[in-house]
Image (cartoon, rainbow, N blue to C red; front, side, top):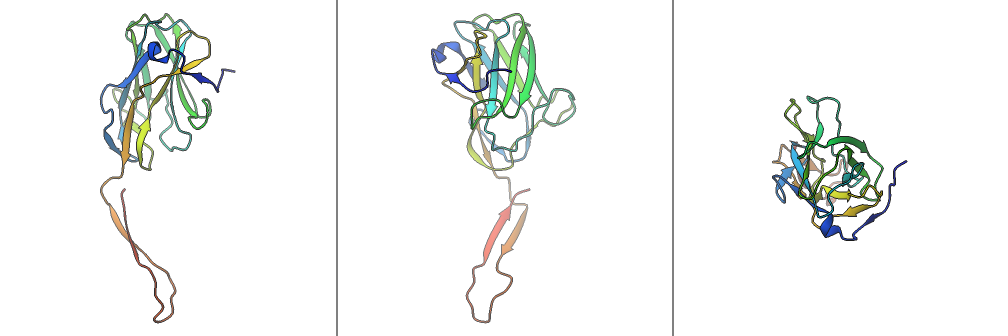
Length: 199
């Protein structure tokens, strides 16, 4: 059973960096299908054989669950190392420390990364026909693809100081609704609310 709880900030600034290849800080419609590339670049220590990185998000999210079986289906995820090291992917919805429970682990199963080598994780990889990764259906000003790295294969994941993130925003109104009481006496006051729902 892998270590599931602790992470550290010890020398985290030298462990490596994580960034979005495109879209960092930009806004995306709630519930839409998108594709993101999270790029981890190894720091001064490189990444040992059997080490791993983790991309986590909060358990209170209905974002699509990453899958690695069907390239044409939603939420397809891939990873590759810039130096050709062999990688393995595993998704567990209850692995990391609360509230960051939903965890995609990218393990280095053969080989290693030297300083400056990188791992590119494609969330919603569309190259095989997938529509992408379905974002959560509610808004969030700062949705992080929080990256942790265990570069020494010691089951102690460093929380990187800079994290990739996006904003999740509502779409255009698709329908307008009136919300009001079903029963009221004559001359009794009531409130009428108007609500616009996106798709």
